[in-house]
Amino acid sequence: MPGKKQRIQASPVADIIPPGNYFEQNRAAIFDWTVLTTSFLLGFIFPSLSAFYSYHWFSFWMLGAFLLYMIGAWLKHLPLYTRMIREGRSPGGMSLLLFLLIGHWLILFTVLLFAAPAIQKIMQLPGNPENDPVSGWIVLVNMLISLFCTWLVFRHQKSLKHPGKYSANNLFYRELVADIFLCASVSVLTFAFWQNGIMTIFNGRAFHSFSDVWASFLLLAMAYVLFYLPLRYLYLVEDHSSRQTWRRMLFIFGLLLVRSVFVMLEK
Image (cartoon, rainbow, N blue to C red; front, side, top):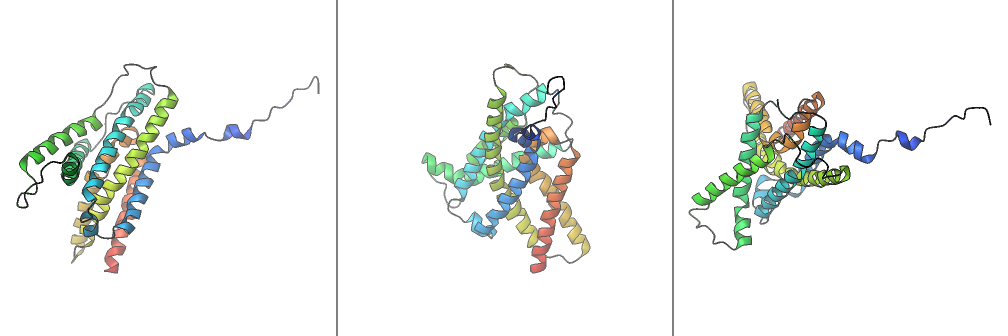
């Protein structure tokens, strides 16, 4: 009516968080749970360690995982550091950085060794003799490539050369594709090295005392730091100071321990 202020009701749509914002706020959690779930589901396809490593496409899986990981890391680097620079956040001050570097290099080096047969077939290179399955030059080249790739992932960007070159939508979809590639590759590598490798060895051990169990848990925790957290580095850069991140990491590690205990009890 005239002379009376009309009450404007807020649209309920305005109170809903846009999908992009929701994904931004939960990006790392989605990555962790996707990797854990996918690596767990791969266990139904390859129920044993020998079944996975003897699979004739294994070297191609390793090569594909390596390429997806490096492409995803390259795509994610720009939007990640652009967001951090614009928000005035620094990537420094991360603990366990030396362990992450060593673990990352060791993982990539091992992946490249496993992927060598696939590379030889694709490039039609002569195979190695049976008494020398891995030659010295392959080891040297893999060491150099894994060192270079580790530098590409762990390097820091402190400034933007062209601040207005990339739009928000461009950066969002670029990082979305990067996250998809990283989830797929890290899931395969986590399954190969962690769930179907270290966890299988851990579950196959015989425990005679509480000290054996405690020592195994400590070794498992160190392996968790060396073989999972390095592949998550591009997410740790942004959330390493969050308590929620480390609570989720501890919770996931606890789930893995509980699962291993049930496997031992079944034996």
